[in-house]
Structure formats: structure tokens, C-alpha cells
Picture 1 (tube, rainbow over the protein chains, first blue to last red):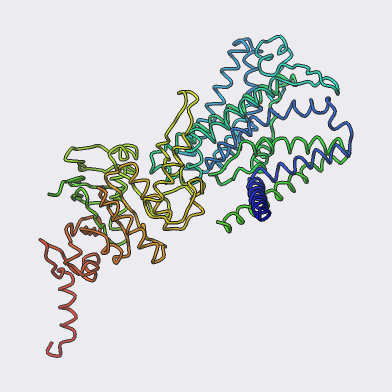
Picture 2 (tube, chains in turn yellow, purple):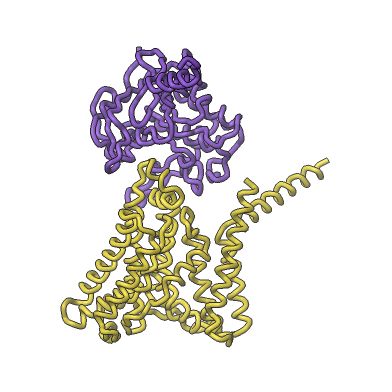
Length: 346
Length: 276
């Protein structure tokens, strides 16, 4: 007589497992995560040195720099806006900082603060144009992209700034100092920027998912009128996110300039689209209302691994954009399918 | 004895050179559902935007419980106890029922710097309120609003207003695009709100819905109040429609043909007369 009861219990456990599995698959991060795992396995099979400590170290050197901007962009896009000027700010901010330092106007630390304040001002202007003048963020930040890039070229007359004194500075060690971590497969070189990226990811993930500001950000992007009617300061929220995004872009640019010992006024060109791609691949909705920091981290890793893996596996590096375009279209189709399925089930 | 909740006195509103409201004076009493009717462009939306703090008045005064107040933004209106439920846009589709319920007034826990939303409390309250407003289905409070029907969404919005003890709930076209059963559900929620001590301003194009639920009707025409005390129990829907269009005037509690309607009728009679 006890046999049917056991069967029913097993059935219940199975049903729960199926429901749990469906819940996991239904998450927006599931698709890009599966693709990430697939890419790592494929590139490892194609080239044994893909997972070598040297290559992993190289991968993790540049990833945080774009990743930090993508984190801020996730919040901005969740609020229904985006910023095309981040690539220009990435190039301009270090150029301005090194210009101040090299001309003897201020110390590197003071130059850093002034440059970051300038990046914040760029974000503030973007935000005020979008929220007060009601101009779409595409047009405002496109204009800012040109202004900031032009300013960087004007200041430097198109020449890179000297950065070789960076190694002697405490600021450099804090932002992008390196350590060697011993592993059974050799030493792994990690930069401080990876730590800062992880810290920012935790903070911004907490803000988006657990704090009241996260609720406001999602509401601002989902239904600004309803949010306003509930007393949410939609305009201020968006302006704050424009400032955060610009500051992150400037900070990342400075980090990158110290790591590669070069501050080129043209650096960061085209990063804006790559960063937006990282964000939407991860599951953040371009039209706003829905965002995921975990998805963005997966998107950042996926695109960096694709770029690295394509080169390492001997495929023409110029094919990178073809792959990225394909991934974006594939992920968008997947997200659309999942959303329709969820609606149908509801 | 009726107690005055909100009073508008000589309120004007100008958008540039266009006057949207002209010397509007009206009163909403406690525990009263008032229907606000008028044709497109009559000034209904402008009026509720002023009371809910979306736009400032150009001149005039607003009183709450007899005390003159200044409403400079939605937060001022919310602080006074005004909750506005806009047509199709009261809620954020992507957020859960619980997150919508507490949007703008999220309960927090934890130390000040690291405080976070008290999600358990939010979900507990949301679950209880869904039962109170009569949503019979067992809908988890984590369900996104996009998964709810139109009637359920309005119910959530009304439940929110009731939970936060809003004294005045403004409902802008709450029955728009709803089926018959859902409409009856929303009308029931509105009656429940009044019975539990809230006042409502009910705006709807469907006068049949207004007649089912309101205690009094105010009619706006081209920015002015042309009737402020129509009793739906002593008036027909056709008469109110004529007041809205201007064919009837409502003066001192009496309906009478408007001067324009009399002139038109006389002209028609004149044309039809063989003597003339």
C-alpha cells in the first residue's frame, strides 16, 4: 500500500525539480550564460592555450575596464535611457588628467579628481538635456560624443599624452596595480581593476535589486508617468544615472591609460556600441524597465572571450564583428521568445 | 453632516495663451464619490493634474479640510492624501505587484547606509490586500503586473490607495477597455473605498458607469463648471448628456433648455412653419 505514496512523493519532487529548472531557464541570464559556457569549451578545444594563465590574465586585464562602464550603462538603460558618449569620455578623461599633470598644473591625484569631476559634468549636461529639454538620449549623447572627442583632439592636437611617470604614483597602484597569484598551472597576473569591477558590480547589483533606488530606476524606465504619480523623482533619477555612467567611463579610461601607459585622444572609439551590446546581450531591455547586473557581467565576459577566442583559434580577427552581430540577433530572438512564452503562460 | 475635504476656489489655468480652466470653484466632501464629466477638452484632465500636483494652477486657491494648501508637485499631493490612478498607466508593468504597491514609499530595513527594501513585508501586505479587494485567484505578490488582467490592475491600484489611507482617490477612466465583469469589479472596489472612509473623483466617458457608483455629478464645459450638484438618483443619463453638450443648463438644481438650444429650436420651428 505504501508504494503509491512513494510514487506520489517522487512525482512531487520531480515536479518541483521541473518547475525549478523551468524557472532557471526562464531567467534572461540563462541564454547568454549557456553561450558563455559553450564559447569557453569550444575555444579550449580549438586551442589548448586558451585557458592558460597567461591568456586568462590577458583576458581579465581589459575586461573590467569595459565592464565598469557596462555596469553603469545597465542602470541607465533600465531607466529607459542610454549614453553614446561613453567611448569619447573614456578617451577624453585620461587625456585631460595627463595634460594637467604633464603641464605641472596639479598633482596626479588632483588631476584625477578634476578629470572625474569633468566627466561628471558631461553626464550632468547629458542628463539635463534629456530630462529638462525632453530631447531623446540618442541625439543628446550623439552630440556629446562629437563634442568630447573633438575636445580631446583639440587639447592634444591629436597626439598621445605622456604617461610614463604613472608607475611611480600611488594612484596608479590603487587603480590598476598588479599582483601575481600562484596557481598549479602557473602564475596568474591580476590587476586591481578586477577588484574594483567586482566591488562596483556588487554595489550596483545591490542598488538595482534590493534598494528603493532600484525600484525607482525600473519604474522610471517601465512607466515614467506612473512613477511620477507615485512621487518618484524620475528626472533626478535619470540625471544621477547619466552622471554615474560618465564618471564610470572616465574612471575606466584613466585605469586603461595607466595600464597601457598611453593616453590617446582616439582611444575608446566605438566602445559605446560594444558596451550597449554587452548590456543587451545580458538581458537588459533597451527600452527600459528591466535590467540585470549578472546578465551584464555575463555579456561582458562573453564578448571579451569571443574577441580573444576568435584570434586564438586562428579565425580572421576581422570576423569578430560578424560573430558579435550574430550573437546580438540570436540573443534578442531568444529574449523575445522567452518573453512571449511567459506572457502566454500567464 | 457632510464634512468638506477639498475645495477649489476661482482656479484658473493657462497653457501659454490658451485658458484650460476658467474660474473653477468646487467642493469634494468626505466619504463621497463625485463623478467629473465633460466632453473632450472640457478641462477634466487639467483639473485632476492640478489637484494631484502634476501641474500648478495659474491663479486661485485649494483648501484641504478648510486650510489653504500649496501643491507644488506630486509629493505635496501625496502628502495631503491624494492618490491618482491614471487610465492604463497607474502601474509599472515590469515590476511585481508588491513592488508596485510600495513604489515611492518602500519600507526599508537594515542599517541606514546598507538599508534595503523589506521584501517580505511588502509581499505579505500585497498578498493580504489582494484578498481584501476581492481578487479571488491565488496570485502571488511577486507576479509582474504585465501578467494581470485590466480589472486586476485597477484593483491593485485601488488597493494601494486604500492601504496608504489616501483621503482622496482620483480615478481617471478606470473602466476603460474593461469587460463587463471586470467593470463591475472595479465599481465594487470604488464603493468599498467610499465605505471605508475614502473620497473619490470618478472620471469616465461611459456615463452608465458613473451613474452606477457616484453620489454627485460635476460637469465641466470649456473650462468652466456648469453643474456641480447633479444628483444621479433624480436625473436621467440623457439629461446629463445634454448638460455636457450644452443643450440643457443646470441652474439652482433645475434643468432648463439652454439659450442656444432654444434659439436653434425656434429656428427649426420657423423654417417648418407654412405661415412664415
